[in-house]
Amino acid sequence: MSPDPRAALLEVRRLRVEFSTRRRTLVALDDVSFSIAPGEVLGVVGESGAGKSLTGAAIIGLLDPPGRIAGGEILLSGRRIDDLPPEAMRKVRGREIGAIFQDPLTSLNPLYTIGRQLVETIRLHLGFDAARARQHAIGLLRSTGIPAAEARIDHYPHQFSGGMRQRVVIALALAADPKLVVADEPTTALDVSIQAQIIELLKTLCRERGTAVMLVTHDMGVIAETADRVAVMYAGRIAEIGPVADVIHRPLHPYTAGLMGSIPAIGQELERLAQIDGAMPRLDAIPRGCAFHPRCPQALPLCRERRPELAASGASRAACWLHAAPSGVEDEADARGTGAPPGAEQ
Image (cartoon, rainbow, N blue to C red; front, side, top):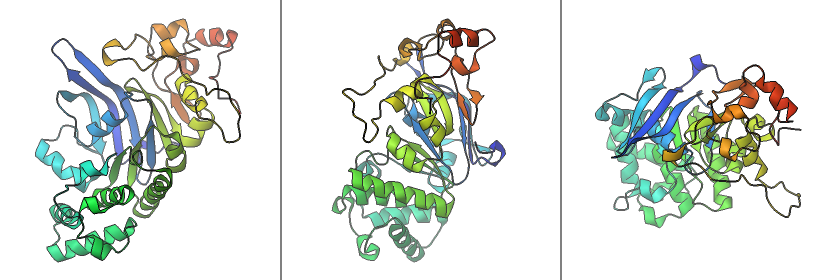
């Protein structure tokens, strides 16, 4: 079941992000809406350029100019944060929202020990004195699996392996005990065995702390292992959102079905993997109607003219005319044998 919006920690409502250029204004995110409950992990997946990382950047207030939030609202614990002044947003970021990025070296200052960086963050947001902040930092390093934390707290980032650095970044993100963590591709730069450890660490921390997590990734294996729900993005919009088991095993949107079909099953012998023909449209060439229709094997005439909204189908919602078509269009889809996307059968 989807979380009760009244209990949501994070609510994103009809978010729109634009980039102004000399020639025109490009819409990078258009009408993006979702919520995350306390202790829930929402996975966000899609091809490169779908808008996953941009959504996370908008939430934590780190959009690079000329990008700007042009519409919609972002609420944290019922308080609107997208219109806060920069200084007020800096207090929210770190204290109430933590961030984990793909490359830990970009999150850590190579000139300072990890202890100094942790202690400064803790003192800034929690107001602890130096001794108490250091003990809190050591506890964080222990909780994230750093061995000999009392000694390693005085080491520099280059003295840690990639997996250990990512654990330090997770400790830094959790330093002020935030309500929400935005994790943008936190396992991409790591080998498979370390990925599994980081995934398990994120799951444990969510369970023990009740922290909500927005997990941005292109890896469906990570989503399957970690997330409670998953949002599939395409061309700056959410194509489908629902419980992770439903989206993986019973996809509603043809794009989601294509993503699932491209993942080989263990023990399955195939000469070629399935693929989605074509490529993600550029921001200055997003087609009319459903943005996916040029690549969709089940496109209806309506798909080329009108953009579908997210519509409920079971526990999931999909922006697809196959599931939200006006009267008469369902009959056309059924007549063509397109009543359900490929991969939806059991």
